[in-house]
Image 1 (cartoon, one colour):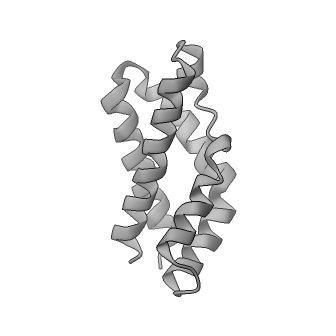
Image 2 (tube, rainbow, N blue to C red):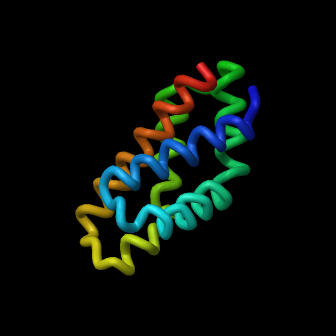
Image 3 (spheres, one colour):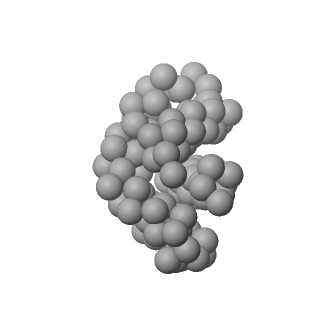
Length: 107
């Protein structure tokens, strides 16, 4: 498994996701996405390796990814005045996107 490739795929997918909803903040959000991935990189790598090796199920992996939801600060959205409900929905989409990308790249 090429974890660096996975990180690039995740970053691209998350930036695209952000751009779909808040295109005018896409450049600022890129920093937030990079920060989240950097903060979660060690755990993401370990969990992805466990998933790839069959040591955990996809459901276990998804639960572990959801545990990182609070690390998603999304400062660009917060600064732009996006309400907490919209931010929560977006974080859920981020988690779904991560799972979808991992299924394609790893499984």
